[in-house]
Image 1 (cartoon, helix red, strand yellow):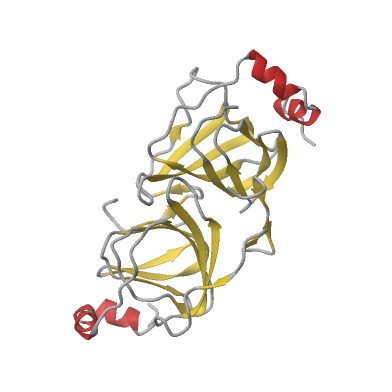
Image 2: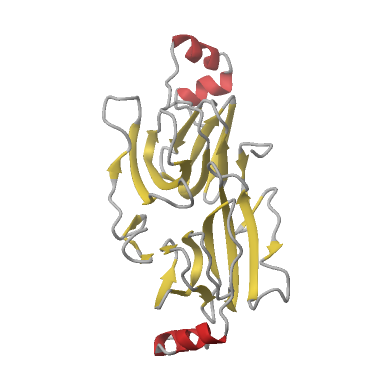
Length: 152
Length: 152
């Protein structure tokens, strides 16, 4: 638990006592303009509650893993890839990423995409697509367009 | 997992495929004007992610239990009691309720209080205060004023 029961939101999408962190180590995986804040290290038995913000035009890593994501958009808008589906998302929309499902979040060119993301505290490392997996994904025109950052 | 990866927010603080439920069975515990929506039955291993909305002037049950709450205010404003502290809360503020800590949420007289609340899927039943516990809480003037619904 934190030292105080209540931590106020401050300056928009920041919180008292919550550091704004880099999304991942630079160079460890492809991404652009993403920050990470851990709101609750231990949100319920074994869950970590985070807030990610993707700057306009930015995108998270295309990856998959055994653990699931439960997501709620908190700010702005953009699109996401989940499996072979591409979805427009905006404030308060819910996204569920099943195990071992390719996924990526992209902010709109002119708006950030901020979202809450819940994960298990104990989780496996994300895996990146190899050339074959990428080629497989790109066979679907809507997925290829998404990966190329084309907006609908 | 749900049938579709994305469930859009609709009509404000409702979501596709998410029912608006009563907070608790009427008469099972004291409360006023609270609704409950389960956003993710299984948000991360063993976590349930809910949205509660307390109508203006309403309040949740004063209770405590072994399980913890991780809360983010999503809409409106109000006050909460956590232990012996009374806190003003508004959009995006974070609240952490430790084990076996008395707590209650009250909406402002003129605004709803909507909040996300994360709990463990397997959790103990809430316990209500007996007369002695209530008397103990009421020794603190700020707590007595809160329980009486007085606004600061």
